[in-house]
Amino acid sequence: MISLQGVSKTYDEGQSFVVQDLSLEIAAGEILVLLGESGCGKTTTLKMINRLVDCSSGTIEVDGERIRDSDPVQLRRRIGYVFQGIGLFPHMTIAENIGVVPQLSGWAGDKIAARVDELLKLVSLDPSEFRSRKPRQLSGGQQQRIGVARALAIRPKIVLMDEPFGALDPLTRDSLQNEYVRIHRELHLTTVLVTHDMMEALLMADRIAVMSGGKIVQLATPRSLLTNPANGYVRDLMKKPKEQADSIESLLS
Image (tube, rainbow, N blue to C red):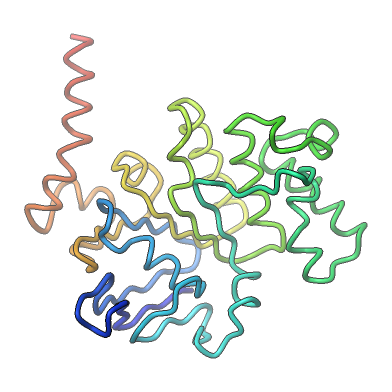
């Protein structure tokens, strides 16, 4: 579904690289997590997929099409995008927020209204209660659900997510992680998720690409990363959830 071949990004004519010679194949229906510390290149990699950032070299294909040959606006309209800041328009109702891209795409009003109600139900919010509210009338978790609904408005095959649950409390975060995995499976989506949270990556991903210094240092299933880390950096990352689990177990003993 998504292919990156020899992709690099530099802002100073090759003196330094944010992402360097990165190759990655993401299968249809997969949740692929880009994991790493701040500055490792994971968000830049995500943004290159929908041309929010253009790569300096290499080739990116989405659903068999070279994205350099695509109009960037049209490309973004068929790829869902969810991020931590949510970015809901405060002066619009929830229905208007969800319906923005369908409206720009020329959908009829009744079709937009039906899709809004369908999506609110999908993210477990009652349409009669929420469609006319403004973002300020929602909790953080409810706003994030609207962000997911808006990303799905025109039925994309691909969803990109940049730290979407990072600002939420632990209970809401856990609930939305599980809810999104359900939606992903139900709609047969392909999802690329950026996070620096090891537990989030391990619990949500089909595969994890661990990044450091603009490169992928290991690409594997969560189980393989835990049992067979490729190097010391990955080993140290994987120690964190193990140490947390051991600390909790010691409190219960």
